[in-house]
Image 1 (cartoon, rainbow, N blue to C red):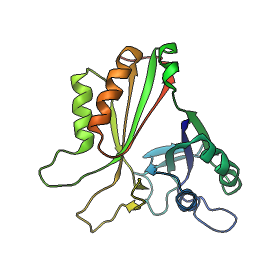
Image 2 (cartoon, rainbow, N blue to C red):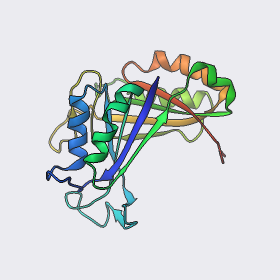
Image 3 (cartoon, helix red, strand yellow):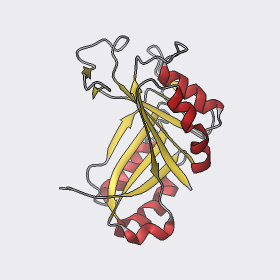
Length: 211
């Protein structure tokens, strides 16, 4: 079964070998053959000492905002790298979110859907994430979000990074929403035809408020 490996670490965190931790993690997972990785920078965060960091108050180059790394991979693949990750992270958070098996669909009321894809950036072509958001709108899904990563790679194994002087953008994109189980099967079937490239991940959750 596939699960979501989620890692949070400070942007300016370095390990014992003086390697920037989040960049080391990216290279490590790439070398270990992980099928994709999306890295996002938070705009406001608390670190391991509960100190606040904000992109408004600090220059990006010098701040220590939380960096979020996420990859969907086979459980056995995740299990093989967990200890090495922990050993090379002086501070941070590592969590594994289990994916859903089809037989579990009827046991829960709500599910989170996360889609990892990238920008198309072709002239006059609707972006894939716009198609997904328009589809969710027609299905009356509320509180769907689209966020852009700062670096990542997909099945093509090409690492895409933010570049100041580049007109070509193929940055990683994360689309997230929560849906009721009665709509889940239909949404997932249709999303498979909309998402031309990327990963669709879903997991059950407890809904506290949705209005």
